[in-house]
Image (cartoon, rainbow, N blue to C red):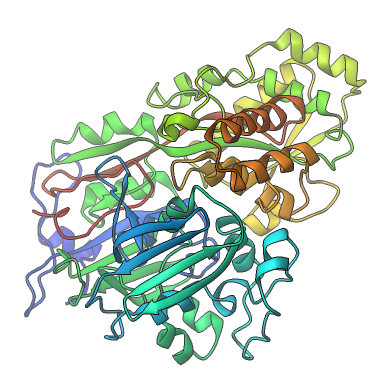
Length: 545
């Protein structure tokens, strides 16, 4: 039976605005599990379902706990700590090597059993690196000549770029036996277990790849191990998943999940209240009270391991002067943004870091203080003459993105900065290199509990900013290398602090605005818990009526 439609939902008496009616769900004749529809702002920016190609907030929502799985997982409902997933255990061999025992009996969506061969292939040159030249220290040392991929299987450049951010020094992965693998790094790395738990380190079926006619065919229907498999994907429109009943973790609680793109917030909310959708994502805080006035609905969520940023292109004629970029950072009243647009439901963090870094957290650090007088003095020192500076953003890709931009432009105007908003249609247009690239919106996550997962991965030598030619700093890159290769915790923390000083104060690459938060509205009769992440968990144990 098809998923619940708007017409059938209303006919069945699903909860309408202002009513207290409890929802009913589509019931398949041979399967009494419910099917649900989730309204999202976007399914995939890249129009693919490749976890390396789609490194995004929206991708995290549909991928994890549903489609893709790694060897080491994160406990989405238990503080995001590392937990066994496709590997049952792991151990350190030395500072450069980790050995993992694979879970036996895991079935891919094509019915094949997962073995060490699939793990080795998931980290192979053909899958991860075949479209890039070996340019950094590790690949020069450790990688053989990269083979020419089969016609049609050439990787888009975004895939090896993301792979290199996740695994800057990976030398090789070997199968010890059918259910044991070893990861060898070219340099010492205290964070190998964290890298194995991050998105981008997920396991795919080698046969699924080989059976696909082209990279794009595979990337729109990858064969993986998650509790749900891909049934239908129409880019820019919807994604339909179906229960993978051979899932190693037990029978999935849902028969089908349908993610539908609904860019406008009012449409997502109205569809939820009418019964067309059972979940509506990315709800702005100012809409929560209105939704919960109807006792049949509730909103869950809060802060997540993601910060909203303003990012600078230091190649821009005006922004080349670090004094101008510093003026940007001191002109922002971050708390005012949190209070006015987020109703105090998030916070201004201590720069690009999270307290779950534990011993690596720099507790006495802070974002640049709000000081308009200092900002104006910096502009005077820089000799700024009021030249226009472009500010690229998407139309509310992030919650409250446009209102935030409008407030920022007024704050910058108050100190003398002439910033002009340029609304773009895609991330490709945002990143495009030309003379008009100046300031842009972005967000950074921490996929695991170490700063190499964020400041280094996003702003270091392999980070997106440097890959697209926005920003670079020799000393910051030296600090990044220390953080990636040193086994001395004190030395690593000292390097992290120095990198913060460079990237946030001396030669700003970005400035943090606030910690991000995500809110999901749902029918209250559904027993489900949100995670402190964009990911939505619908595995066994986290859905009931």
